[in-house]
Length: 330
Image (cartoon, rainbow, N blue to C red; front, side, top):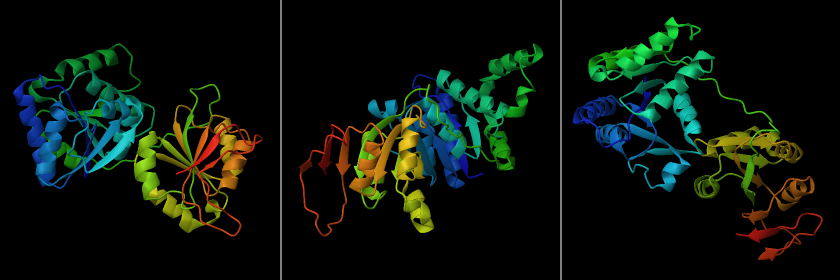
């Protein structure tokens, strides 16, 4: 097991022994060349275990929700940052990216993460178990509560199907080493016209479609959770498709489709609750989306090659039949 997801407390006001244990776990992970996948905060046990991993040669992936960034609470130790809209998305990403999941002592946020993993496993999204690090019996009462639910018939099968316990570091290492690799089923998002409406947060014309500036600057700046590439030619070229998938920022969804289908998907709310960054290769394709009824307020015109008959512009007001918005050269 190389990629280990850890859930734990962000509190600073807890007993020193919990910090000591988190540090020991992080040291072992770093020396063993493991990758830590966690919530990315610079607080409590989260920062403690991350620092120990980093100082001992391990890799750190932080899955960071927007609110954490707004509060300036993101750790500076991260080797890779995966941005998410909210806590629910963060839990999904940590579960999907991790080969095994460990729950160190924590509060309500940690409990939320634990039950998210167990509930998803119980209906077949994955077969991963949570290992409770039950130091000094920290989780005894929770485990007893789960047993009570079982005894009263509130479990389709034993909850122990979905978790294991480790009472010390040696037991934890042993269970992690023995755990068999399993896959996580990806959640397929389907059109949901009655669900929370997706939002087009940015629209850009760029001949290169997805490249460094788009992936690292624009996507983060606008807080996009999905990049939608609308281009008829891209779907016919395997090399282009492969390049776009490689260029996509980690933690951001990617859709590549024809211009006509992109218009249809956007109008039918195929991406409920998501922040969509729309990219076309040329102005004509963007204009087609607008003609088809896609609500695009402003368009950022990026890399567009000069061709015969073209001219440089600073600001273009599109014809009224396109929309009432502006296209900006940037």
